[in-house]
Image 1 (cartoon, rainbow, N blue to C red):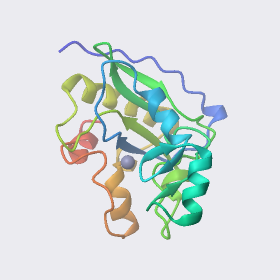
Image 2: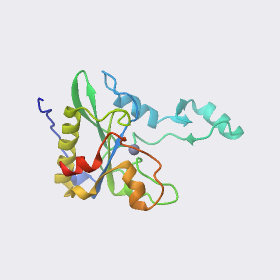
Image 3: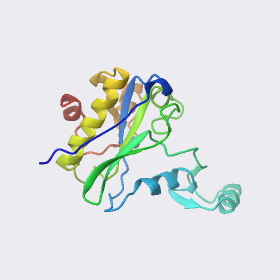
Image 4: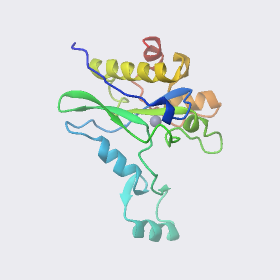
Length: 190
Ligand SMILES: [Zn+2]
């Protein structure tokens, strides 16, 4: 396995004092080209039941209650960064600025602390179906170590999204970052 290379410049002086990291998956296939921009477009659009809709359709359907889940646009992609395969190489994409709280790990009625205090990172792919490939796994470890070093984050504060629910003592609402992503193993390799 050839080691993927990661060069990252983290400006701690322009960041919130992050005390942990929450890992996510996109729960969608990782295409050959860059998927990150489509995820950003999705998060910054009006959405009904997981589909992008125009603003006028959103407002019309909201009035008559035609839909289950109504999500107005977020200011930016939910995460601070993410990883994916682009043209046969694993790459890192920056998300929202490190000075901004995330929109990735809030639990309605329980707590928003994992958005305000923990960085959100997302690996593109559906890891409910298969684990990350070795190169992607290794790259995610490297990325995590870089943020741990910059913000003095202990490995115990690197968690998978589903662990947010456990730590808050509420029922698990997600399998994110995927049933095949062993977060305990990931932590042990940091
Ligand atoms: Zn998640």
